[in-house]
Image 1 (cartoon, rainbow, N blue to C red):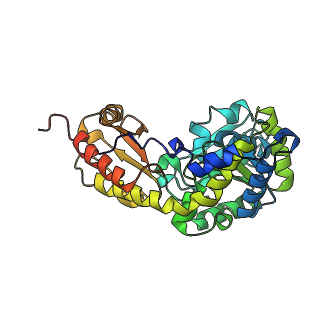
Image 2: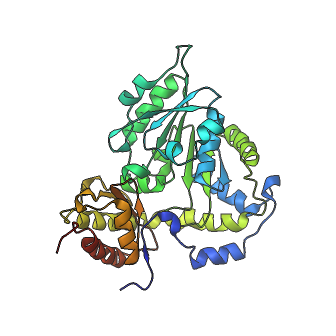
Image 3: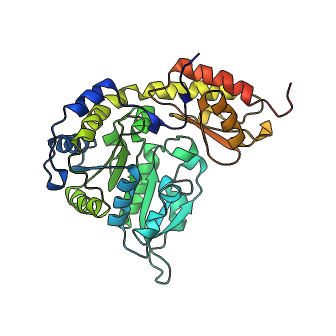
Length: 350
């Protein structure tokens, strides 16, 4: 049995490896606001290279990276189109309205996968008395849809059609390496054509802090100034970038293990009569399942699991979320599944 809690709340809870700690302790640093931190400069150059972009910017969080991109792609009074469960809409503190002066036009897409036929009717491009569409924002993988992956063909069509209408397209790629692993393509190929891409170092890749924003050289120059306006000038942050470099180089190599552990959980949960889940929709490292038939709320289930040493998240009153990551083994997932079988018995079951 595990001696520590089995933490399946998020892939943000990972701890830095010994190699990361050594790299952080010995990192060469300088003042990044002056562009003089050599470790940050290496991280930004390497991220740009991996994504086949002209430049990249190290930011403290994925939220900051997304919101910088939205600010630069839009002007006040415009609309941003995104999926209804999208992170930029639901979990970024209404920053599109507060910082960019934009409102959101949502689309409720099956499995969180946007398509051009779903987007096209939502566009407002010529009616002067309506808020004009300024940006399309996509998310791949899609967190609250259960880590689902948008196919390359969908993204290509959306980008092509949007650009034909002079609309930029941003990718919230917080877990884009998970999507690339599932599709067996490079992140450069997967994200080709997007006007900007944000990805997290501190989720599945395992860094303790940080995200990256990649794009054209002029775009990133403007993003650097906007980062400073948001308080994101971090000075000698090469200490953080050193861990980010290891995460960027080594983290993607083992994401398939997280995906396998998520499938293990999903297939086991599907055998519990009072749990509703379709294992076929579990493509990466996120597992969302419905516990309504237990007669318990998701919060009650989460509370019981916590008392038994398993930490999880909730999506709403009926749904629980599990996220696999590098600090949870297959053996621990099996242990968590055994506990889930007991906790998810219907109320009154003997």
